[in-house]
Image (cartoon, rainbow, N blue to C red; front, side, top):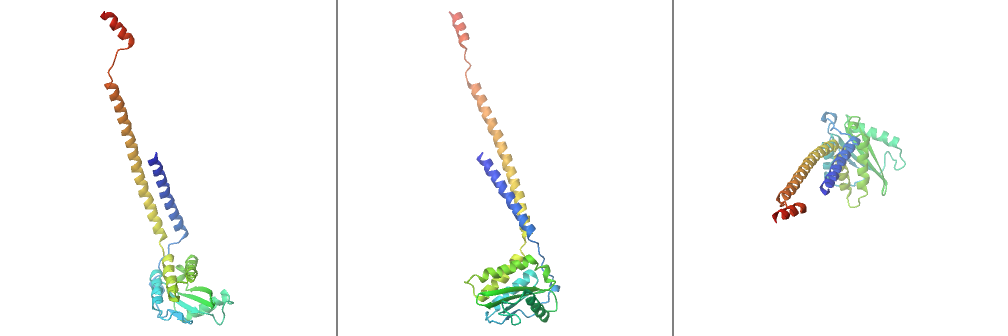
Length: 244
């Protein structure tokens, strides 16, 4: 009974994990890396108007990692204002400004501008502006993943400014291009293999029970055959009567 209970629990866990993985995959689209022809790499990466980074080599490396994963060359714009406006700027105004900046930097639609504007100490706003080709990768969910990374790591006071931006680009790239569909397939395969193991275990348990029952029946029969057959009291009385 204990073994059966373990099998039932194990089976339930396998299929729950498979179902969860499939559900996650359904809510997370599989993204294809942008074609190289859609994004011509330019030797412009960072505009650090606040001088936060100093040596920006490590940040560039993280940005190149983002491009390798997504196919999109990013541009990092660190500032305290857009066209002279800080926290009061509207999304529409920011979009117009960044559209003009994009057109001044690139001749194709495969790039992305990440703007980090800290308009007051610990007060900031972030923007992503992408070309239309880059939108095939940077959909609404991908944008949220990227900006969530920025919020999460900005709150980590142990990181330097350079380490903060490194984390954002690397972690965002990994999350955006994560193969959840592959994980789901692996989970389903794992569940199928687990089910096969359970079937073998169940068959083995049934066979064991059959053999156990046969052994018990054989033991009972042996005891019956080995037990001496004595006379009943009536037969014993008749025997004694005629023996006299």
